[in-house]
Length: 322
Picture (tube, rainbow, N blue to C red):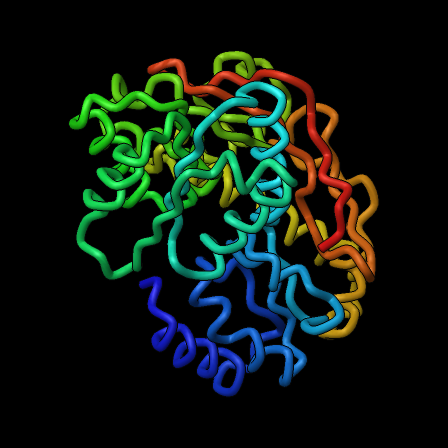
């Protein structure tokens, strides 16, 4: 339930009661952070955590933890570079979630903007996960004269930001982080018309994009959904995400062979070579090493056209190691 205390309780039960081999795809930054030290002390793999906070790709301090999502700082740097190239005179307003997720994005965009960050960012405002709305934050950023809004948020708050900007008749260039790009969970509730023109980034094929209808990887995903989850929304990026993480987990287990020890699982997970998942964008592969735990380091920009996301520009690799 995205609740750190509940996560601690359940993960302890899994490790000490069920004696699980590993945890897989725990969801969210605060819940993963709450059990990270514990799992590392117990030497239980915390694999492919559903978060991109940089603390989950830190082999020196947390050798048993690997995040799946692109590192938020990497993603922030990519937005910074994109803004410099395409909106060099922008007055940037940043909305961010007051936790590791939001702070990593903020640090990343500032790194990407470099020396220009001080002059280009006209306002930063944060919100707590417990806040009912973020209306006042959006009003504040508009009043500061921002003409580019960077929203480093999670689905509920991202939808609120889009809706409030529309209510205020404020139309900045709007960049949204990858966690909040679900059409069904974010853009539809916010209003598809209000969401038109929003920019983000991606590293996977979108099931809604007709460009992939004859793609072999997408066909496999649709077949999987038809067979195992026919009642599920096959067009949901949450389902395609779940499929991609599971495919990677299966790959690691196969690579481990019959040596299903925790140490060998980590050895295999940190020794992936050019693995190409079904739903990775063409030209993107997964490679990890003992000193680079990042699963997804490549991205491509995309823009929402009112119905679906359209990819544009080159594949961008973040070579910077945090």
